[in-house]
Length: 152
Image 1 (cartoon, helix red, strand yellow):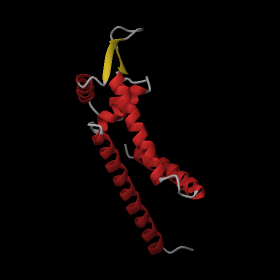
Image 2: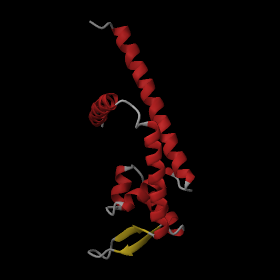
Image 3: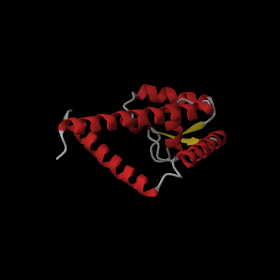
Image 4: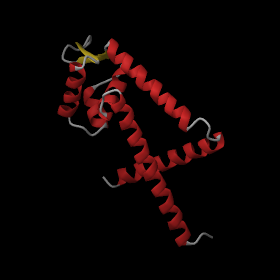
C-alpha cells in the first residue's frame, strides 16, 4: 500500500512537471508566432483558416473570446494581406476567409519551423515512453475536463 505522503509528493511533483511543460509549450508557441510577426492568437486564426473550415463565431466560442476580439484579429490579418474575405457562396450574410499567397507562405514557414522543433525535441525519445506519455496525457485531460464540467 502507498502511504499518503508519498502519493501527495508524487502528485505534487507530477503537477509541477505538467505546469512547467505547459509553460514551456506556451512560450515556444509564442516564440514561433513572433518569429513570423504574429501573435499566438493570430497564428491560431490563420492555422484554422488554412483548414478551410473557419467560422469566426465558433472560433470565438471555442477559444472563449468575444466576437469583437476575433473581428479585430481578422482585420489585422486582412490589413497585412495574409487573408482575404469573400461573400459566402451559400449565404451572402456570411464571409468566407482564405489565405492569400503571402498567408500561405507564412503558414508553410510556421509549419516547417514547428516540424523542425518536433524533430529536435520529440523524435529521439523512446517510442514506449511516448506511448505511455500520450496515454497518461489523454487520461489526465479527460479527468480534468470532466472535473471542470462538474464544477460549472
